[in-house]
Length: 128
Length: 197
Image (cartoon, rainbow over all chains, first blue to last red; front, side, top):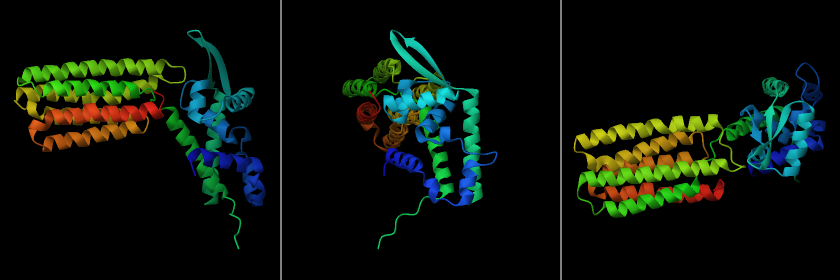
C-alpha cells in the first residue's frame, strides 16, 4: 500500500472511530489526564499542516498543497480549522501580481504540536 | 474461515503518527528547486565539450575548454535553479537553499584546489576522475537536503569517478561525457518529470 493510501486508511480509521475497539485504559489515555489528545491536530491532514509549518517559518498554500498532496478544497477547510483555533496564522500577500496565501505556525500551534508529540511518546512508552 | 484483521494497537498508531510527523517535517525542508531541465542543458554542454576535447592535444587548451564548459554549465544550473524557485508552487526558502549551497560548495572548492595541484604535477590526465569524484561528493552532500534522486546522482558520479581513475587515461573524455553529459541528462529528465521541471 502506498504512503498516501496508508495515511488515508489511517484517517478513515480515525473517522470511523476505531476507539470503540480499544480497551478502557486506552480510551482513558486518549481522552483524560494532562496529556489528553488534541483531536484538532490528530486529524492526518491538519497534523501534516502543523508539522510542515513547524519545520519552516512560513509556507504558501501552493507549497502546502504540493507537500501534502491534497486538493485545494481539502487543504482550505483544514487550514481554516487550524486558523480558527489560532494554531496557524494566515497572511495574504502578492507575489508580483499573483495573490498568495501563506501560513505560519503560531506559538500556541507549536505548543499544541509539542504536547501532541509528548502524548504520542507517552502512549508508546506506556503500551509497550 | 477468515478472521477480521485486529485493530492496530494504540502504541503502533502513535508510532505511525510520529513517523508521519518526522517524514512531513523532512519533506518540508527539502530543497526542491534542483532543476531537471537545467541538468539536461548542462549535460548537452558537457557532451559538446567532450566531442571537441577529444581532438585537443595541448593540455592547456583541453583544460581551458573544460573550465569554460564548467562555467557555462554552472551558469545554466544557477539560472535554472532561480527560475524554478521563482515559480509560485516551488519553495526556495533561504535557510534550505543556504544549507544546500553550504553542503554543495566545499567539495567543489576541493576540486578546484586539486585541479591546480594535478596540473602543477603534470597529472592532468587524472583530472576527469578527480572532477567526477569531487562533483559527485558535492551533489551527494547537497542532495542530503534535496529530493531523493539528487544524492543518488551524486553517488553515481563518484562511482564513475573511481572507474575513471582505474581506467586508461585515454578514456578521460569518454568518462566526462558519460558523467557530466549522460548522467546529467538522465537524472535531469527524471527530476523534470517527477519534481516539477
